[in-house]
Length: 413
Image 1 (cartoon, rainbow, N blue to C red):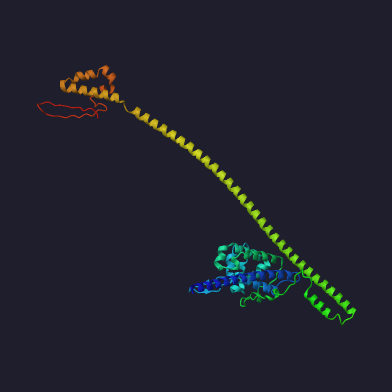
Image 2: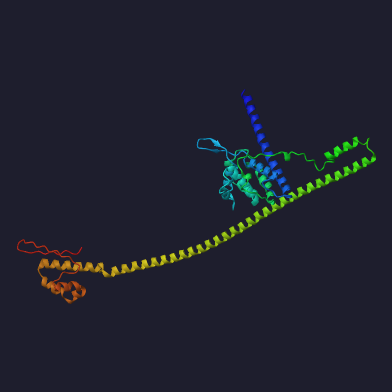
Protein backbone atom coordinates (compact mmCIF):
# COMPACT_ATOMS: atom_id res chain seq x y z
CA UNK A 1 0.00 0.00 0.00
CA UNK A 2 2.85 2.36 0.80
CA UNK A 3 4.50 1.76 -2.56
CA UNK A 4 1.14 2.30 -4.27
CA UNK A 5 0.71 5.63 -2.48
CA UNK A 6 4.22 6.70 -3.46
CA UNK A 7 3.53 5.72 -7.06
CA UNK A 8 0.31 7.73 -7.15
CA UNK A 9 2.12 10.68 -5.65
CA UNK A 10 4.82 10.53 -8.31
CA UNK A 11 2.19 10.23 -11.05
CA UNK A 12 0.34 13.26 -9.72
CA UNK A 13 3.58 15.19 -9.40
CA UNK A 14 4.56 14.40 -12.98
CA UNK A 15 1.10 15.31 -14.19
CA UNK A 16 1.22 18.64 -12.36
CA UNK A 17 4.67 19.37 -13.79
CA UNK A 18 3.51 18.54 -17.29
CA UNK A 19 0.42 20.72 -16.89
CA UNK A 20 2.53 23.66 -15.71
CA UNK A 21 5.00 23.21 -18.59
CA UNK A 22 2.19 23.01 -21.13
CA UNK A 23 0.53 26.09 -19.66
CA UNK A 24 3.76 28.08 -19.85
CA UNK A 25 4.43 26.95 -23.42
CA UNK A 26 0.88 27.77 -24.53
CA UNK A 27 0.98 31.27 -23.05
CA UNK A 28 4.35 32.10 -24.58
CA UNK A 29 3.39 30.71 -27.98
CA UNK A 30 0.12 32.60 -28.04
CA UNK A 31 1.92 35.76 -26.93
CA UNK A 32 4.35 35.41 -29.82
CA UNK A 33 1.46 34.93 -32.27
CA UNK A 34 -0.36 37.90 -30.79
CA UNK A 35 2.67 40.15 -31.29
CA UNK A 36 2.90 39.04 -34.91
CA UNK A 37 -0.79 39.77 -35.52
CA UNK A 38 -0.38 43.22 -33.95
CA UNK A 39 2.56 43.94 -36.24
CA UNK A 40 0.56 42.74 -39.23
CA UNK A 41 -2.48 44.84 -38.31
CA UNK A 42 -0.39 47.97 -37.65
CA UNK A 43 0.63 48.02 -41.33
CA UNK A 44 -2.95 48.86 -42.34
CA UNK A 45 -4.56 50.70 -39.42
CA UNK A 46 -3.88 52.38 -36.09
CA UNK A 47 -3.99 50.14 -33.02
CA UNK A 48 -6.31 51.33 -30.25
CA UNK A 49 -8.64 49.87 -27.61
CA UNK A 50 -11.18 48.81 -30.24
CA UNK A 51 -8.74 46.51 -32.03
CA UNK A 52 -9.50 42.85 -31.23
CA UNK A 53 -5.83 41.93 -31.72
CA UNK A 54 -4.81 44.42 -29.03
CA UNK A 55 -7.52 43.28 -26.59
CA UNK A 56 -6.35 39.70 -27.01
CA UNK A 57 -2.69 40.71 -26.55
CA UNK A 58 -3.46 42.55 -23.30
CA UNK A 59 -5.34 39.52 -21.97
CA UNK A 60 -2.41 37.23 -22.82
CA UNK A 61 0.10 39.59 -21.17
CA UNK A 62 -2.05 39.80 -18.02
CA UNK A 63 -2.15 36.00 -17.82
CA UNK A 64 1.64 35.81 -18.22
CA UNK A 65 2.32 38.44 -15.54
CA UNK A 66 -0.22 36.81 -13.21
CA UNK A 67 1.00 33.24 -13.77
CA UNK A 68 1.61 31.60 -10.35
CA UNK A 69 1.61 34.99 -8.62
CA UNK A 70 1.72 34.68 -4.83
CA UNK A 71 -1.16 36.00 -2.78
CA UNK A 72 -0.86 38.67 -0.11
CA UNK A 73 -0.95 37.38 3.46
CA UNK A 74 -3.26 39.34 5.78
CA UNK A 75 -3.00 39.90 9.53
CA UNK A 76 -5.18 36.87 10.21
CA UNK A 77 -2.98 34.54 8.15
CA UNK A 78 -5.29 34.37 5.15
CA UNK A 79 -3.96 34.79 1.64
CA UNK A 80 -5.79 37.34 -0.49
CA UNK A 81 -5.38 37.49 -4.30
CA UNK A 82 -2.88 39.94 -5.67
CA UNK A 83 -2.60 41.73 -9.02
CA UNK A 84 0.53 41.90 -11.16
CA UNK A 85 0.54 45.69 -10.61
CA UNK A 86 1.85 45.13 -7.06
CA UNK A 87 4.91 43.44 -8.56
CA UNK A 88 5.38 45.94 -11.39
CA UNK A 89 5.27 49.07 -9.20
CA UNK A 90 7.85 47.56 -6.84
CA UNK A 91 10.23 45.94 -9.35
CA UNK A 92 10.11 48.79 -11.91
CA UNK A 93 10.54 51.66 -9.45
CA UNK A 94 14.22 52.00 -10.43
CA UNK A 95 13.51 52.47 -14.14
CA UNK A 96 14.62 55.98 -15.13
CA UNK A 97 11.75 58.37 -15.87
CA UNK A 98 9.14 55.74 -15.05
CA UNK A 99 5.39 56.31 -15.07
CA UNK A 100 4.61 54.53 -11.78
CA UNK A 101 3.73 57.70 -9.84
CA UNK A 102 1.61 59.05 -12.68
CA UNK A 103 -0.51 55.91 -12.74
CA UNK A 104 -0.79 55.85 -8.95
CA UNK A 105 -2.11 59.42 -8.99
CA UNK A 106 -4.86 58.75 -11.58
CA UNK A 107 -8.28 59.56 -10.14
CA UNK A 108 -10.41 57.40 -12.44
CA UNK A 109 -8.16 54.33 -11.95
CA UNK A 110 -8.67 52.91 -8.48
CA UNK A 111 -8.33 49.12 -8.44
CA UNK A 112 -4.99 47.36 -8.71
CA UNK A 113 -6.03 45.50 -11.88
CA UNK A 114 -7.15 48.73 -13.54
CA UNK A 115 -3.80 50.37 -12.70
CA UNK A 116 -2.00 47.41 -14.25
CA UNK A 117 -4.00 47.73 -17.46
CA UNK A 118 -3.39 51.48 -17.56
CA UNK A 119 0.34 50.82 -17.11
CA UNK A 120 0.37 48.44 -20.11
CA UNK A 121 -1.23 51.10 -22.32
CA UNK A 122 1.08 53.89 -21.11
CA UNK A 123 4.31 51.92 -21.66
CA UNK A 124 3.10 50.77 -25.08
CA UNK A 125 2.55 54.40 -26.09
CA UNK A 126 6.00 55.23 -24.67
CA UNK A 127 7.49 52.22 -26.56
CA UNK A 128 9.13 50.99 -23.32
CA UNK A 129 7.27 47.77 -22.46
CA UNK A 130 10.31 45.57 -23.11
CA UNK A 131 12.51 47.90 -21.05
CA UNK A 132 10.19 47.67 -18.03
CA UNK A 133 9.96 43.87 -18.24
CA UNK A 134 13.75 43.52 -18.57
CA UNK A 135 14.35 45.82 -15.60
CA UNK A 136 11.90 43.85 -13.46
CA UNK A 137 13.51 40.52 -14.42
CA UNK A 138 16.97 41.79 -13.43
CA UNK A 139 15.77 42.14 -9.83
CA UNK A 140 15.58 38.38 -9.28
CA UNK A 141 15.14 38.61 -5.49
CA UNK A 142 12.08 40.80 -5.87
CA UNK A 143 10.65 38.53 -8.57
CA UNK A 144 11.27 35.51 -6.36
CA UNK A 145 9.38 37.18 -3.53
CA UNK A 146 6.25 37.71 -5.65
CA UNK A 147 6.10 34.49 -7.74
CA UNK A 148 5.97 30.81 -6.90
CA UNK A 149 8.16 28.10 -8.37
CA UNK A 150 7.29 27.26 -11.95
CA UNK A 151 6.13 30.78 -12.85
CA UNK A 152 6.93 32.15 -16.29
CA UNK A 153 8.65 35.20 -14.77
CA UNK A 154 11.09 32.91 -12.92
CA UNK A 155 11.98 30.75 -15.92
CA UNK A 156 14.36 31.18 -18.80
CA UNK A 157 11.40 31.94 -21.07
CA UNK A 158 10.99 35.35 -19.42
CA UNK A 159 14.09 36.67 -21.21
CA UNK A 160 12.68 35.47 -24.54
CA UNK A 161 9.41 37.21 -23.68
CA UNK A 162 11.24 40.53 -23.17
CA UNK A 163 12.98 40.09 -26.54
CA UNK A 164 9.68 39.30 -28.23
CA UNK A 165 8.07 42.47 -26.87
CA UNK A 166 10.78 44.64 -28.48
CA UNK A 167 8.97 44.35 -31.81
CA UNK A 168 6.04 46.34 -30.37
CA UNK A 169 8.26 49.44 -30.24
CA UNK A 170 7.72 49.86 -33.97
CA UNK A 171 3.95 50.33 -33.54
CA UNK A 172 2.33 53.68 -32.82
CA UNK A 173 -0.41 52.98 -30.27
CA UNK A 174 -3.22 55.37 -29.38
CA UNK A 175 -5.29 54.78 -26.23
CA UNK A 176 -7.76 56.64 -24.05
CA UNK A 177 -7.00 55.96 -20.39
CA UNK A 178 -10.49 57.09 -19.33
CA UNK A 179 -12.38 54.50 -21.36
CA UNK A 180 -13.70 51.05 -20.58
CA UNK A 181 -10.41 49.39 -21.53
CA UNK A 182 -8.86 50.13 -18.14
CA UNK A 183 -11.88 48.91 -16.19
CA UNK A 184 -10.68 46.34 -13.69
CA UNK A 185 -14.02 44.72 -12.98
CA UNK A 186 -14.06 42.35 -15.98
CA UNK A 187 -11.51 39.51 -16.10
CA UNK A 188 -9.10 39.00 -18.97
CA UNK A 189 -10.14 36.21 -21.34
CA UNK A 190 -7.91 34.91 -24.14
CA UNK A 191 -9.43 34.21 -27.54
CA UNK A 192 -7.56 31.25 -29.05
CA UNK A 193 -9.62 30.95 -32.24
CA UNK A 194 -7.49 33.32 -34.38
CA UNK A 195 -4.46 31.11 -33.72
CA UNK A 196 -6.18 27.75 -34.30
CA UNK A 197 -6.72 28.24 -38.01
CA UNK A 198 -4.91 25.77 -40.24
CA UNK A 199 -2.20 27.43 -42.32
CA UNK A 200 -0.93 25.32 -45.22
CA UNK A 201 2.80 25.07 -45.66
CA UNK A 202 4.37 27.09 -48.46
CA UNK A 203 6.07 23.94 -49.78
CA UNK A 204 2.77 22.20 -50.38
CA UNK A 205 2.10 21.22 -54.00
CA UNK A 206 -1.57 22.15 -54.04
CA UNK A 207 -4.03 23.81 -51.74
CA UNK A 208 -7.41 22.60 -50.50
CA UNK A 209 -9.26 24.81 -52.96
CA UNK A 210 -7.26 23.39 -55.85
CA UNK A 211 -8.00 19.85 -54.73
CA UNK A 212 -11.72 20.61 -54.51
CA UNK A 213 -11.71 22.22 -57.93
CA UNK A 214 -9.75 19.29 -59.37
CA UNK A 215 -12.22 16.79 -57.93
CA UNK A 216 -15.15 18.80 -59.26
CA UNK A 217 -13.62 19.14 -62.75
CA UNK A 218 -12.75 15.41 -62.93
CA UNK A 219 -16.30 14.48 -62.05
CA UNK A 220 -17.78 16.72 -64.72
CA UNK A 221 -15.35 15.97 -67.58
CA UNK A 222 -17.63 13.33 -69.17
CA UNK A 223 -20.65 15.62 -69.23
CA UNK A 224 -19.08 18.96 -70.31
CA UNK A 225 -17.64 19.92 -73.68
CA UNK A 226 -14.07 20.87 -74.40
CA UNK A 227 -14.79 24.57 -74.01
CA UNK A 228 -15.93 24.10 -70.48
CA UNK A 229 -12.80 22.08 -69.73
CA UNK A 230 -10.62 24.83 -71.18
CA UNK A 231 -12.40 27.49 -69.14
CA UNK A 232 -12.00 25.36 -66.01
CA UNK A 233 -8.29 24.93 -66.64
CA UNK A 234 -7.86 28.66 -67.16
CA UNK A 235 -9.74 29.40 -63.95
CA UNK A 236 -7.60 26.87 -62.11
CA UNK A 237 -4.42 28.46 -63.35
CA UNK A 238 -5.64 31.90 -62.31
CA UNK A 239 -6.56 30.64 -58.87
CA UNK A 240 -3.14 29.01 -58.59
CA UNK A 241 -1.49 32.28 -59.47
CA UNK A 242 -3.61 34.13 -56.93
CA UNK A 243 -2.71 31.57 -54.26
CA UNK A 244 0.98 31.90 -55.07
CA UNK A 245 0.73 35.68 -54.90
CA UNK A 246 -0.88 35.43 -51.47
CA UNK A 247 1.90 33.14 -50.30
CA UNK A 248 4.57 35.47 -51.56
CA UNK A 249 2.78 38.39 -49.92
CA UNK A 250 2.67 36.49 -46.64
CA UNK A 251 6.39 35.70 -46.88
CA UNK A 252 7.11 39.34 -47.64
CA UNK A 253 5.16 40.47 -44.60
CA UNK A 254 6.97 37.99 -42.41
CA UNK A 255 10.32 39.17 -43.77
CA UNK A 256 9.24 42.77 -43.20
CA UNK A 257 8.25 42.00 -39.60
CA UNK A 258 11.53 40.26 -38.96
CA UNK A 259 13.39 43.17 -40.51
CA UNK A 260 11.58 45.65 -38.27
CA UNK A 261 12.21 43.47 -35.24
CA UNK A 262 15.92 43.15 -36.01
CA UNK A 263 16.24 46.88 -36.69
CA UNK A 264 14.58 47.70 -33.39
CA UNK A 265 16.80 45.18 -31.62
CA UNK A 266 19.90 46.72 -33.21
CA UNK A 267 18.79 50.22 -32.20
CA UNK A 268 18.22 49.05 -28.65
CA UNK A 269 21.62 47.37 -28.46
CA UNK A 270 23.29 50.46 -29.95
CA UNK A 271 21.59 52.65 -27.35
CA UNK A 272 22.70 50.30 -24.58
CA UNK A 273 26.23 50.26 -26.00
CA UNK A 274 26.43 54.04 -26.21
CA UNK A 275 25.10 54.33 -22.68
CA UNK A 276 27.67 51.81 -21.45
CA UNK A 277 30.47 53.64 -23.28
CA UNK A 278 29.45 56.99 -21.80
CA UNK A 279 29.20 55.43 -18.35
CA UNK A 280 32.64 53.89 -18.81
CA UNK A 281 34.09 57.26 -19.82
CA UNK A 282 32.51 58.90 -16.80
CA UNK A 283 33.97 56.22 -14.53
CA UNK A 284 37.43 56.62 -16.09
CA UNK A 285 37.27 60.39 -15.67
CA UNK A 286 36.17 59.98 -12.06
CA UNK A 287 39.02 57.52 -11.49
CA UNK A 288 41.54 59.93 -13.01
CA UNK A 289 40.24 62.83 -10.88
CA UNK A 290 40.37 60.68 -7.77
CA UNK A 291 43.92 59.57 -8.56
CA UNK A 292 45.01 63.18 -9.12
CA UNK A 293 43.42 64.37 -5.89
CA UNK A 294 45.04 61.51 -3.98
CA UNK A 295 48.44 62.36 -5.48
CA UNK A 296 48.11 66.02 -4.47
CA UNK A 297 46.97 65.06 -1.01
CA UNK A 298 49.91 62.64 -0.69
CA UNK A 299 52.39 65.37 -1.69
CA UNK A 300 50.88 67.79 0.81
CA UNK A 301 51.05 65.21 3.58
CA UNK A 302 54.67 64.40 2.75
CA UNK A 303 55.54 68.12 2.84
CA UNK A 304 53.79 68.46 6.21
CA UNK A 305 55.66 65.44 7.59
CA UNK A 306 59.04 66.88 6.50
CA UNK A 307 58.19 70.26 8.00
CA UNK A 308 57.17 68.65 11.29
CA UNK A 309 60.40 66.65 11.35
CA UNK A 310 62.42 69.85 10.87
CA UNK A 311 60.52 71.56 13.67
CA UNK A 312 61.07 68.57 15.94
CA UNK A 313 64.83 68.65 15.22
CA UNK A 314 64.99 72.38 16.03
CA UNK A 315 63.08 71.86 19.28
CA UNK A 316 65.39 69.03 20.30
CA UNK A 317 68.48 71.21 19.66
CA UNK A 318 66.98 74.12 21.60
CA UNK A 319 66.12 71.82 24.50
CA UNK A 320 69.68 70.40 24.58
CA UNK A 321 71.18 73.91 24.45
CA UNK A 322 68.90 75.09 27.28
CA UNK A 323 69.90 72.13 29.43
CA UNK A 324 73.60 72.84 28.84
CA UNK A 325 73.19 76.55 29.68
CA UNK A 326 71.24 75.75 32.84
CA UNK A 327 73.88 73.25 33.98
CA UNK A 328 76.70 75.75 33.34
CA UNK A 329 74.83 78.51 35.20
CA UNK A 330 74.20 76.35 38.24
CA UNK A 331 77.82 75.17 38.25
CA UNK A 332 79.25 78.74 38.15
CA UNK A 333 76.89 80.07 40.86
CA UNK A 334 77.96 77.71 43.70
CA UNK A 335 81.59 77.44 45.08
CA UNK A 336 83.63 74.38 44.37
CA UNK A 337 83.65 71.47 46.85
CA UNK A 338 87.45 71.89 47.39
CA UNK A 339 87.06 75.48 48.58
CA UNK A 340 84.22 74.53 50.92
CA UNK A 341 86.29 71.74 52.49
CA UNK A 342 89.32 74.07 52.99
CA UNK A 343 87.17 76.75 54.73
CA UNK A 344 85.61 74.14 57.00
CA UNK A 345 89.04 72.75 58.08
CA UNK A 346 90.46 76.19 58.78
CA UNK A 347 87.53 77.29 60.88
CA UNK A 348 87.49 74.09 62.89
CA UNK A 349 91.18 74.48 63.64
CA UNK A 350 90.86 78.11 64.79
CA UNK A 351 87.87 77.47 66.99
CA UNK A 352 89.53 74.53 68.57
CA UNK A 353 92.62 76.58 69.45
CA UNK A 354 90.55 79.36 70.97
CA UNK A 355 88.52 77.05 73.15
CA UNK A 356 91.59 75.26 74.47
CA UNK A 357 94.29 77.96 74.96
CA UNK A 358 92.30 81.17 75.23
CA UNK A 359 94.53 82.84 72.68
CA UNK A 360 91.83 84.36 70.61
CA UNK A 361 93.62 87.65 69.98
CA UNK A 362 96.74 86.00 68.64
CA UNK A 363 94.66 83.91 66.35
CA UNK A 364 92.72 86.90 65.24
CA UNK A 365 95.97 88.73 64.50
CA UNK A 366 97.12 85.71 62.68
CA UNK A 367 93.90 85.58 60.75
CA UNK A 368 94.16 89.22 59.90
CA UNK A 369 97.56 88.73 58.52
CA UNK A 370 98.07 89.26 54.86
CA UNK A 371 98.86 85.64 54.09
CA UNK A 372 95.56 84.29 55.55
CA UNK A 373 93.44 86.96 53.99
CA UNK A 374 94.98 86.25 50.67
CA UNK A 375 94.09 82.59 51.01
CA UNK A 376 90.67 83.00 52.70
CA UNK A 377 89.56 86.58 52.16
CA UNK A 378 85.95 86.17 53.20
CA UNK A 379 86.64 84.23 56.40
CA UNK A 380 89.36 86.64 57.59
CA UNK A 381 87.29 89.76 57.05
CA UNK A 382 84.33 88.22 58.82
CA UNK A 383 86.42 87.39 61.87
CA UNK A 384 87.90 90.90 62.03
CA UNK A 385 84.38 92.41 62.07
CA UNK A 386 83.17 89.75 64.51
CA UNK A 387 80.53 88.69 61.97
CA UNK A 388 79.36 85.13 61.31
CA UNK A 389 81.44 83.30 58.77
CA UNK A 390 79.87 82.58 55.39
CA UNK A 391 78.37 79.19 54.81
CA UNK A 392 79.05 78.10 58.43
CA UNK A 393 76.37 77.29 61.00
CA UNK A 394 77.38 78.14 64.52
CA UNK A 395 75.93 76.62 67.59
CA UNK A 396 76.90 78.09 70.90
CA UNK A 397 76.18 76.21 74.06
CA UNK A 398 76.67 77.91 77.40
CA UNK A 399 77.34 75.63 80.32
CA UNK A 400 78.16 76.92 83.78
CA UNK A 401 80.38 74.34 85.45
CA UNK A 402 83.33 75.36 87.66
CA UNK A 403 82.89 79.02 86.67
CA UNK A 404 83.91 78.38 82.99
CA UNK A 405 81.95 79.05 79.80
CA UNK A 406 82.32 76.70 76.77
CA UNK A 407 81.44 77.52 73.12
CA UNK A 408 81.18 74.89 70.42
CA UNK A 409 81.04 75.67 66.65
CA UNK A 410 79.79 72.98 64.34
CA UNK A 411 80.94 72.80 60.74
CA UNK A 412 78.33 73.22 57.99
CA UNK A 413 76.39 70.19 56.96
